[in-house]
Length: 308
Ligand SMILES: Cc1cc2nc3c(=O)[nH]c(=O)nc-3n(C[C@H](O)[C@H](O)[C@H](O)COP(=O)(O)OP(=O)(O)OC[C@H]3O[C@@H](n4cnc5c(N)ncnc54)[C@H](O)[C@@H]3O)c2cc1C
Image 1 (spheres, rainbow, N blue to C red):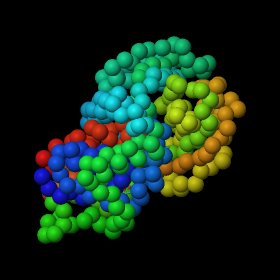
Image 2: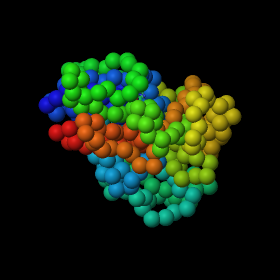
Image 3: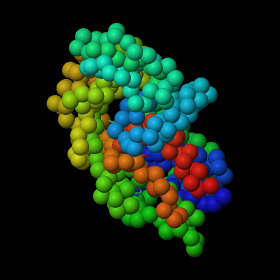
């Protein structure tokens, strides 16, 4: 059991910190942005393996994530996690989704709004990120870890007074901290609207206009979104927000008249493939694109295994 520094306090860094603490390591989390300031705080967040590769590893991590979130939803009422049935709509019915093995209750449906051919009904973990990130940070502290704001210009050196190992969960920051030019932003914008009594979630993941999702939370509903490759801006666009709401209304007419409460933009840390590998005393764990929440527990478990 050694001393580990985790760089990053988004959903990936905090989940890795929890698993490493559970395995008996001493863990200090260092991060420029604290949990509620991260991209992770912007996520919708529904369990769904969107925009992350390679498919075989993503499927295994997503399956582990599904089970972990189901257990948290059952045991931890204050975690912001709940299991909820909803519908993914499709423009043209096809074979079962490639990730269907990760979901226990997937079934086909033709009861979908006009304009869609059919869809898939299944129970998914819904994760209310601000609440969940607070809960995760609380887990880190209660297990004896620490979380400190620090803007790093390089990964901390290991050995001779430094930590025994470093886990790099810096998301977009890995572009510089790991000198990895393949990391790039995929901008996503969402609109928060008032809760109008919606329980089920709705999703259209494959569309020329970008992903569309309506994710109900305790006090509001996250309506998204966009997926803009290479865009760095974090300023919400009023035109984009109007377009998102127009599309969402076709999918979920109950949203008509719902008051707009706010706008958020986040930069998904994208990469051709998630990087999860050990190089000497450093474990890199970044590049989760549009599925960091979904993959968090699966990846955290593998990171803990790599550090024994
Ligand atoms: C609009 C939107 C909707 C989304 N919806 C979903 C969804 O429904 N389901 C899902 O699974 N995923 C979703 N995602 C994707 C998900 O948000 C990301 O994959 C996830 O947040 C990545 O987590 P992370 O911990 O790697 O990165 P981040 O949350 O960005 O955290 C990175 C951490 O590294 C730190 N860091 C970076 N550089 C440095 C440095 N130099 N020094 C110190 N610290 C540093 C940061 O400060 C931060 O603490 C969505 C994303 C967006 C934008």
